[in-house]
Image (cartoon, rainbow, N blue to C red):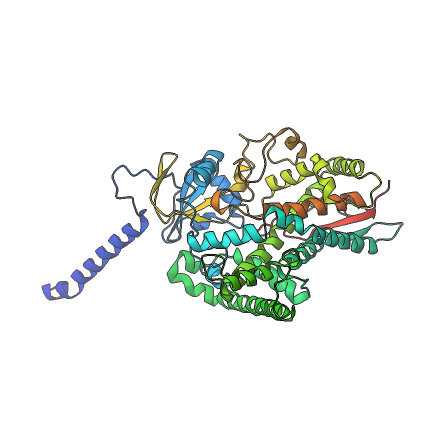
Length: 509
């Protein structure tokens, strides 16, 4: 080969190849890997470009639990270009959600969340900072405080009475009938949340489909967030078009809701304020907007983002607990009988269970705790992101690392729980462990600053619904069904993949 050809072709190739290798090496290492004494958490072997994405599987909470058994309760995965710290033990969760809570209180950017949640202006996915603090305070004070939750008691009891009436209407006095409990629970929680947040019920087939599509999209994997140069796959698969369609439909719906409330306020004595106890969440947001009582501006986009948070989150996770709770009781008739015995003893001759009765129902509360242990609605919680380099349990974690807390794995840890895969509500009769974010053995709603603020609201619905269903009806598997299918759905919130169908008969004294 002549020197001219070498100069013309070989040298440029070698230079380009060297630059490529250097860039790949720099991309592959953690941001702080060059630091002396840097000690990252252990990591499974990874593939070029994909990293560990191929190891997530259809049910990442289960796949990551298996990986953590081999690599430890703190491990780092490479999800395409995204470094992710996976947390799978009580000590590690406490370190992240309590000891270093401020460092890990940010949320990662996501194209799905940006499109569906108004550029992440909702409370759940907003970046950590003043905007998030102010909007969370609106939620906590005006929708989810103990006083407000109690003020919604009438709504809950009316909707539960409607549910019981509908089931009774479908039964004959002599033979049981099958009830689609998944559909029933979804409708009930939708009605409760609509009345509380939006002021009235909204229904119809398309509305239910829209909500289902919205929740499903929140948990979809999109290539562009992890491997940017593969973002074209999301366009080719139709994901981008579907996100735009659902976002537009919800935006139009929320605009109509807000406009209804604006017109209602105009009709109320020339704009007089609506009585606090009669106000729904949209009314409250309009009052805050008018009075400018907080440090941020509540514009129309912010308002719609907050309404969407209250509506979607309150509906989906609440009915998931009901669905799995009844599933486990149907699989364990002895546990169901014990719960019914307690309910009927406490209720006596009362025609229905009210919220005043619930404090006496220790076993029912244990059933809900055990359901949350085995089936946390969001098993990997909502991801966090570190804002600075820090040390966690002796390991270095770089700024910008995504954090995935596997609440599902912690709640099934055999070092913490006897027979962790079994449904045993009675374990909680002698345990002080609760699910409110103080006991890290059981964190289905998260913990720390970014823990779910709606625990009291969700549990109030779940307890009242389960209590009345078990009090009023005797339940069993449909004819010909010997065992329930426990296959899980995929996505952010984990439901049963197939609807829960149960046989109901009016309870005999």
